[in-house]
Image (tube, rainbow, N blue to C red; front, side, top):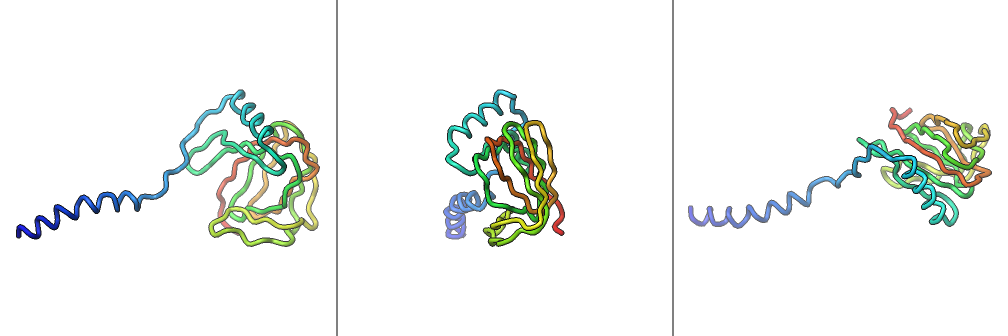
Length: 163
């Protein structure tokens, strides 16, 4: 009996750290407010750090809905989000957004990835976008930003049922 109690007393402290290691990863912090000055600071920081391509920062985040500020300084590869619709507001700059059609040269994404990219869009519709414009890109819709001129935008990816 004493041996069993001693063994239990020695094993209990070992089980606590192992249980702590098995906990899921900490979710991103909740962020419910960003002032206009905060967003302008995100844009200025992104412009300073951007070396071509896409730079981003968090405007807000709650329950798996990150609201991002994305800054693009050049054309980026076309993509689709198979299980997410994307709401976009142009905060600054301009571009041509090509949507629809067929994504060509699809590259397999990483396991669990929400985005697939390709090499081109065939048969898409171009639309000029500028500061103040909004667009909703449905899930599984090819889209690409071209003719990019210092593009800062707010994006929200919203989970939807897979088609």
